[in-house]
Length: 171
Image (cartoon, rainbow, N blue to C red; front, side, top):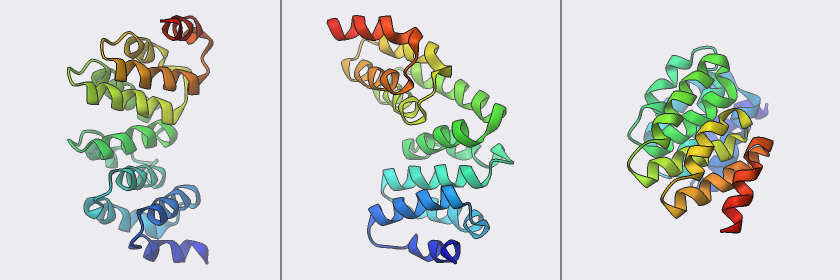
């Protein structure tokens, strides 16, 4: 019964309610949501909610990562963030491979905001499989990029990053 009640709540006025509903959709995976989420994503204006919608859609389409590629390669950072986290969580080996390629591109991008996006996605996912990307971000010239990378490193709890984290915190 709960699954059928979730879809209408995507139209709720509060973005906090919509994010909560999207988190439940991600967890419960109601089939009806697979058809309605693309339209919801397209119309969602709040970046955090839009990211949550893309991530929820990723959980529903794990059998076909190609459905997430338009979001991964979108110029909308909320779409890219949701797709990165969704592919890392639900995309299997192919999703991880696609995400790693995108994370490496973002980590090398000339815009600080794209490098920050890479660090934030790694922080949300919290895996130590991307230490090389985090090491690069932790050496970034921009303070705000290094700060996000340090937060991500703390979330991953990777032993390989400890020395770098200690060095960064001592400066």
